[in-house]
Amino acid sequence: MHKQANTKCKLSRLVIALSASVVLAGCGGGGSDPAGGGDGGIGGFCSAANEKEQFLTYMRDDYFWYEDIPTTVNLDNYSTVYDLLEGIRSEVDRFSFILTEEEYQSRFVQAEFIGFGFSARVIDTTVFINYVFDGSPADNAGLRRSDELLAIDGVPVSTLLQQGEYSDALGPSEEGIAVELTWRRQDGTEFTDVLTKTVVDTNTVLATDTLNFGNQRVGYYVLNSFIQRTGQDLNNAYNQFTDIDELVIDVRYNGGGLTRFANQAATQAAGNNVLGEVFTRYLYNDKNTQNNNTELFQLYEGVRQFNLNRVYVLTTAASCSSSELIINSLKPFVDVVVIGGRTCGKPVGQVPRAICDKRTFVVNFETVNANNQGRYFDGLPAQCTAPDTLVGDWGDPDDPLLAEAGYHIANGSCSPTMQNQEITLSQQEPGPAHTLVEQWRSEH
Image (cartoon, rainbow, N blue to C red; front, side, top):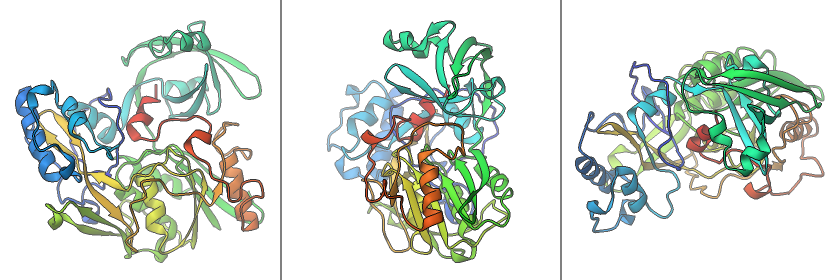
């Protein structure tokens, strides 16, 4: 969960600085700015020593778990601000991280990176495609969700993985890098093409469809993250639905993002059932209780709304932060049916702070819903469980999560094989790690 600046600079490359997770809170205008700002700090170049001093001072005041910071911290023991964060973070903190300003602008604001435009999962010595961005080199070549990547420049992927050379074989994040890929569809058809890296626009709604389950007309869309462009992506999705009886929001790989767009997605779904009610309350540490505030359900950039009494949400352990906020915030007002696996468990968030040429994302607050329910650090459970097994492209009727949602819609209950089961991270088919930063790491 985070608040972001609206800077216009055009930056294209993201190099993730830390292996950490991210919870982002709302940005800009109205109730979605939990801190009433978020761009504070001193920008520009600083010495490493000054940067560390500023960061430690900020942590002692604003960090949600500031009491866990050691009383005495010798800054000389840490060569960089990244090392300092790792050295003083709370043991319960899986979420705080730091980006350079360029990294922040690239992914959150400009919504782009340099690559081929696909996300992949590694299972032992095989690689499968999780999703493909619209209009990317991968999309134009015909690469699709569930395809198996067989070879890179003629070298079997299995060999590259065994030798630890898979990532290197895909080349650096530079425009113009060309690689020959060979892949196989689920039906056994093989393809080979040369893909060239370019600037990839990261559409946040990956697929939209209208399906029929029983006698119910069902809207279905895949929401992959909450960043600056998500508001209009949501509008494009909701504009495609007409006369739907049910709605399925697929956030199985969504690592989080701007909470105002979680609010928009939820409000466009439930409409008059939630408008003006409490979406979430932001609660800061005891040094910053003046920042505590309440955000109401509102459309933000949304135009079209449905007034649904029930919303289905498809989840895995990779469903994090703002994805979980959709579920927790809607529950006091409408029936939310969660299908898939237990979510990642991230009921806290950050207001990014500019320090020197960095943008720090340390946990500042927690969120609770209208019933003051939060602290779901073990994740939110699924009513009907199903594994995230790749069987085809988005909307495939044999997809276990979508099929289970369809069964519940048609029958009003979980399928007999899935009822009362618990799908944990270790039991799910391997997928991207359950953080937004790690989600980016799976994208090439």
